[in-house]
Length: 87
Image (cartoon, rainbow, N blue to C red; front, side, top):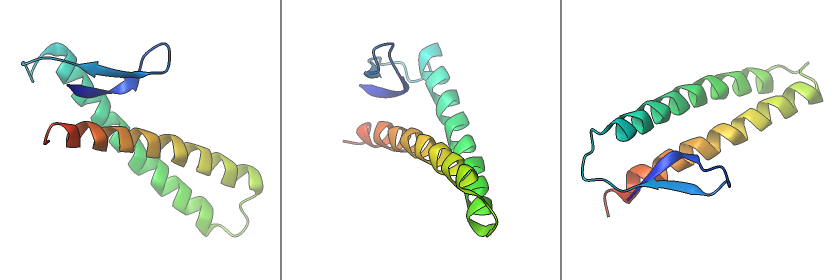
């Protein structure tokens, strides 16, 4: 079972059960994971820039932290998904 990089309409985790690692859904999941990881890199760079700016206000810091938390959730889901295939 592969944990997919998105949640269902009810907010619960979605899983893929297939013996075809190159199926359309598997490829879509791979593409979404790659996009999430690339986005996390951008969010991290932005958050670092905000934190390095002594003049950054509360609003900028809160925005950066909110985006960082979202990205961390995505990256952790990807990590869990990738680790589950090795056990």
